[in-house]
Image (cartoon, rainbow, N blue to C red; front, side):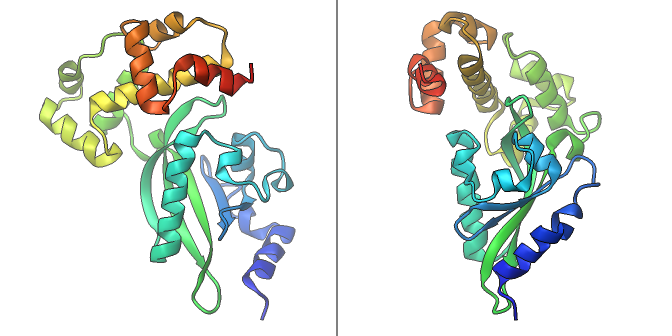
Length: 243
């Protein structure tokens, strides 16, 4: 009997496995071996991550592609699947969009077993959050959309709850269930993530970025940024840009 590696390599060479997902709209597919190295991905996943072919991504770890604040969670979830031998479903997590800004996606991860029952690899499906939860009918999605459009403004959480047709207490409970954090924490995290991208991709001053992402001033921005990234904005920029 062929080993799992040989079987999966046959799939890769023939293209059958990942081609199953090529024509499903808005779905990204990937697979990793026990060392968490990528070895399969459909074209949507490859292009989303900035690659052209499976050969470009084969053997890479998450940390080679994505920011560390994302890869820590990816790794923890992968290890859970390997350990429990069970899928992890409907994970709401941050994943880069094609323009590298962080967005919320829904990920499902599944174990791949070899013939003796050992988990030899994992595969996953990633879908945009908005495609899974209808913003017109899902109150949490509506609030997420409102926050994104008002990120530079002062955001009033009770007002957001009212616009979504919820009490503030109910909104807090729904956010905690779906994201594991409160609406306030969500706002601060999103602001810090957008700020991090601006630090890497622009030459705007720290103060300009602070105001553009809704922080009151330079000091409050610096404090919150360090809470999320463990370093100061200027050090982060130097490290991210190599300057």
